[in-house]
Length: 119
Image (cartoon, rainbow, N blue to C red):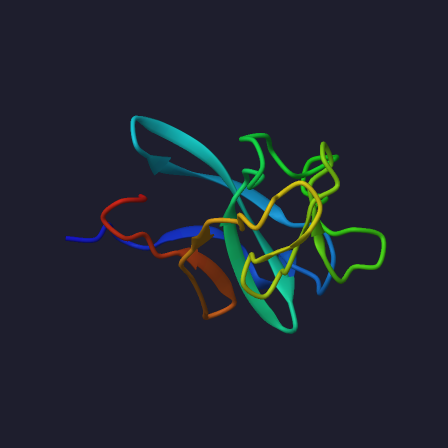
């Protein structure tokens, strides 16, 4: 059975192409960092882990977009990812994308809606 939805932040906390909100999810044997950003009006969440090596993407806490505000970027390797689906677009991600996480936006808030494998 899936775990209950968990509040991440208020909808107003996410600005299009602006800073993301960090949170953690249970994965495997412990908590892993994750983040949610707003892109094209939607709240989208991913594990905060580069596809190349398991380092966090943000260059400052919550800063996931590149200067153009079009791509998510790994501060360590410069790998670029599509905010829409986490797909690797170039750089050292070598075709490995980000791990998406399920979120829902309702009643002015954004919730993590975990599956059985990530809570």
